[in-house]
Every structure is written in C-alpha cells, then in structure tokens.
Image: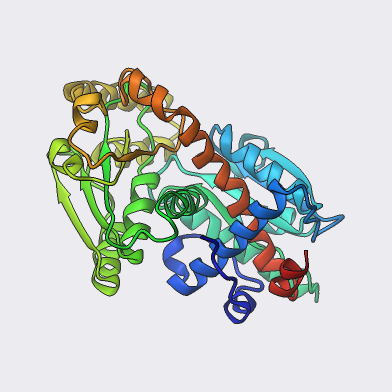
Length: 371
C-alpha cells in the first residue's frame, strides 16, 4: 500500500527544518513519509534521484553513531549531494564558540546540516535551534537565497529521523495504517551507558497522533520529560488513539501488536549530568554514569524475552539498534527479528532523503511522479 504524495502539502515544507516531529502537523508528516516511500521505490528499482547535485551536506555529531551517520551519507549521496561528517569535538564549541556562530560558519558553505546532540538534557534541541538561527541570520544578512535546512539527527528531546523511520516501517508491516494498533514502548535493562531519553520520547509523542494505542512502561525513576508526555496525551485525544503509562512491562506487552523495548537513563541522574558537564567535571560525570548503571542493574528482569513475546498478539519487535542482546532482548527473539530490525533501520535513509528534498527541491511532487 503506497501513500500518495500531496503536492500542496509538500509545497508548504519548502525551506522547513525538522527539529521535533511535534513542530509539524500530521498532514505534513504524512507528506514527508509519502516522499520517503517514493524514494524507497526509486532506490529499489535502481532509478536515480539526484535532485540536489553539487551541494554540500554537513552532519555534525556530538555523540557516537553508526546507523545515522550511514543513513545521512547514503541519503545525501543518493540525492547527488556531497556528504561530510563532522566530529562535534573538532569544532570550537568547547572553546566558547556559540551554537549560532557554529551555524553561521557551517551554513555559509553548506546546503544542509544534520546535527546529533543528544547526551545532555536541556541542551541538544536548544543548540539546534540556535544553529538554525545562526544560519538564517547569516543568509539574511548577506542576501544569500540558499536554503540550508537543519535535520535533527537526535537530540535530548526527540530522534525524529528514527521515529519517522519506525512509523514508515510500522505502516509497511501493517498494510499502511497504525490506527487501532497496540504498541508497547518499554524500558529494558542495559549494562551499558545511560542512554538518552529521546527515542522513547519521540515514539510516544509521534505514534499516538496517528491513532495508535500506545503504552509506555518503565520502572520508577525512569520518567520521560513533561513536554513529550503532554504531546503524547494531546496526540491521542486528537486522533482517537490512547496513551497510558505503567510500571508493569508484562501489562504493556499483553495483546500488543508491536513492542519497542529499549533502555534509557534515569531522569534525575541525567539532569545531574547537565551540571557536571557544564563544570567539565570528568570525575562527577564518571560517578553519575556508574550510579546510573547501578540503578539499571536493579531491574535486570526488564527484558524482552520469549515469555513476554508470548503475551503479545504475535507482535512485531522493533529497536533503534544496537540492542544489548541478552539484557534488553533475549537472543532468540533478536535472531527471529534480525532482518526485520535491519529493514527498520534502513528506512532512516529514505526519511532523511525526504526531509532534505521537501525542504530544498522545487516542484518535488511533480519531479518524483516523473522519475
């Protein structure tokens, strides 16, 4: 079931950046996903989509990444752009350069900019909006008519390219629509670092807007930020879906059509990390990480195993990867869904292509129809 591209809605996305999915209407998100699906069709049939030749696509990463870096590079290259991955630690930010200055410096040469800044609560999304302000101010001051959109490649609030890829994958799996589907977004135990809150926040703030019945499950102390929870409730009310929160992983899995169990850090300690990061206190950061992992270890039974999968309605397993196999998910479950989660991950490439194209390409719907 292939979505139709609405040319009128696509036209309204010209020049737009995506910094949270909440910033866009459901119609705008639908239009972007329809474009992503069309790019996927073209790619799989071997037809080129080099709509942005000879343009530079920077991606600035302040955190580690495999899938998102690969997706950015693949998306930019397929559009005919030159992708360049920039290590955030190689910038002058740590020496006092502001986000707006960074935006101006990169934006004066680039034609698009992706940013990952996800580790510090209260910083990442603000940084991206300041980056955008710096670019826009520079372009305006120099009468430069270039469009340089920002794509959020993960921040402290949201991970929109991931969650839109998840939605694209869910729609493909369920025949085009997730309305009425029961989806569990659950915390799961991990022995590795205290992961950001942005993936579960992005999922719960996005999926209820499309009519899904979403249950968020986590132990005490692993609450999400207030804004994404509010957006989740508002989206459910507007769409006819539902959003509930529980501290019982089994209850979230019962009767679910899809499950998304992954780890994230305890909120209080994540906020402690803000102060330690601002003070450049390496010892404090290490101590916070150790305490977060110790708290995680109290909930080792929060695992996606065969017993919990048997509680579901033959659910689809999803994960943003990499999953901690044996901790977040039982090996046999991962083995069964290994190809599925790889397909899920690959959707991000087409989402990024779509976000760049809707922002930058004139008459995009007509050009894709003719491709």
